[in-house]
Image (cartoon, rainbow, N blue to C red):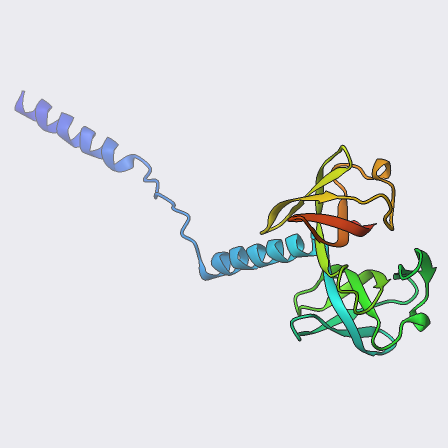
Length: 208
């Protein structure tokens, strides 16, 4: 009987030692994984910036074959890169009409619309030339249309919120029936009785 118990114990020990041992594998983040995650977040932020249209407003202080330099009302110098073969120039001084880069002069007051790159340079897509030194049409509102009814357009701007834009009897730009919810607009106008009234509106180009 004693020999039987000893034999049983030996067999049990042999069976236990024969079982395969599986190591627990854990995925520990490496330095490379962390670097890739940071790079992806940076690229995501840059893509978000590129998808949001921006506008630089000010007077032209210099121009080259592919760059416009402007000075805004705060005295800041802003740069706009352009491709004269693809950028649309529109003059709105007396009436809205297509213009050319050669018609743009030093001192002209412009609204440059496009998409800002990582260096803070605006890649221009559309340039509006508006009356210089016009004390009335000095406020600019840009954003996405979230409402359009009863001659009031509601625009939503990142970091600012919603702005109600009213219209006088006449203005420069598309008719209200031509403006759809979801489109990006830029409106130039003034405060009238604590309300923003547009004098010029233009549709912003969408990202490609």
